[in-house]
Image (cartoon, rainbow, N blue to C red):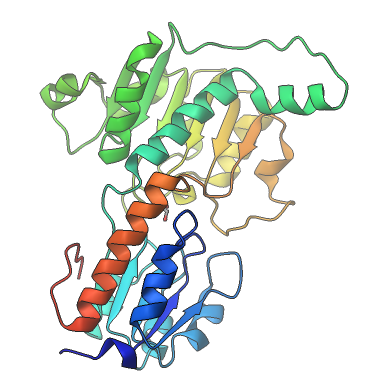
Length: 323
Ligand code: DGY
């Protein structure tokens, strides 16, 4: 059904929408009747979001908890344009039941997340965060680094992001192994990856990087048993979703030194707060779900989400519809 955009109210909950290109905000503000922005600096919980969606026609959504309760509180909502690729925090069944269109931005942030994963491998192997802290406080530490050259890098998940990581690692003179149930050995080989069974990848990697979505099959995939398969002294990088890792098992293996270090860009509750147990280790690098926060990715995600949000409000077909 066609609506006059001037009669529409759009809620933008993504906190990085228009971060690098303010024209994305002004364009939206000039076209629709009213734009309401996330009043906080973090993704919204159900309790925070449910009151905000009342009277809203369209939403450009970040990593907020868009539960059935939120969707049921929305009395005019026609579209949830997810600014990003993960759909794990949107109750798609509830949206479908209410006839609300959900769109997303596939591929828009893949390079950006892949760059962060490679950066974190280097930062872990070379103790960059510790080196920076100690040097700035007057120290001159001789830190034992580990290079990527000659090491085995394992990737779990070889989709858009995993494949970019492979391309970026080509110049590092390392062995790249990977597992993805959706890819054959031949397809992986064409990409430049040696396809192995999942547990073999976990066992053989010096750096293990996760690139899977969060769903029923992947939740807690990296638990006491599977993390225990990692090489002693290996590093774990997670720029995907925290739900892939059983937190208590990770803490235990960091404590024992079995896992030499971990880089975590996602947390079950964001922000995790300074008392989060994983943040107590020097050998853990924590970043604020920053995988897509580059000029290129935020501009692309913003453009795709804006176009699809407006398309649905205008009664047109969006380009990247999920339900
Ligand atoms: C995604 O695309 O889901 C990223 O986590 C950022 O939103």
